[in-house]
Length: 291
Image 1 (tube, helix red, strand yellow):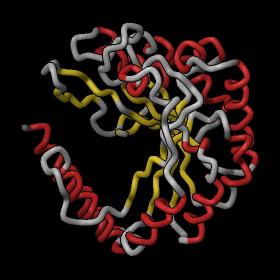
Image 2 (tube, rainbow, N blue to C red):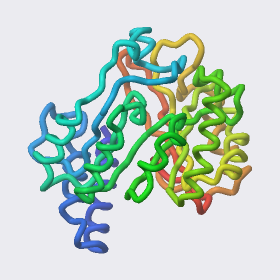
Image 3 (spheres, rainbow, N blue to C red):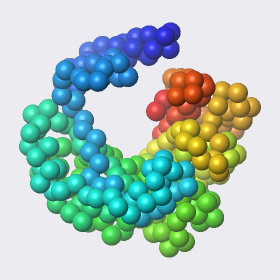
Image 4 (cartoon, one colour):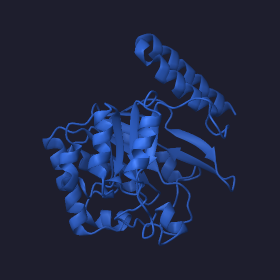
């Protein structure tokens, strides 16, 4: 309860400060505060969010061993479908007075057969675009990604082909396509960030990940803890783990990063065990911030 109250207090303080600093953002910040206040407590909300997360497809061209969809159903992506362009347009037109940002997800969103038309709708309505992708199809879609107000996250996990194969179950060509795709994003000055899923088995790779980031030059690195999901291959991060306890201290010591906010937030899941969700970001100024 103390954690929840502290989080809401921090959220309200941030809302007030940002509203004073940027009066134009008052409406957006108010909705964000209301969402934070209602999150996990209400089945319905009494306002329309200014950011919509839309899964335009549930198909995917990778078969990650830790994927929660595949752990529940091995054929989940084989029988998955795409959202129709008509349904996507309906969402934008119905809520166009309130939407400022659209986050398109999947599955792998770049697989959608009408991806070009979808991003054209977003561009025509002058909306901000956020997208999470595995990066394997960036080269094929680079023309669609130009001239967009976009924030792109590439879920990478591996720093070389061997680690990529283990964590993403992908081919060497797919890994090379990701590397070349990031090169194209840099060439066209399209900002992107890369994210890595953390388990106990991957924590020792943090130094390698940061060195890898220096080479590919993302605007941001995001670390996410793997959710408890029943996989026998990967071990979720727990508060009892010595690796978790030493993780932040080692990273901050080795890379002289400045820590902002709380990056270890306890939460309960179905079996009532307490897990640590280590979520952080390292931006281009070498600062680690709360996700």
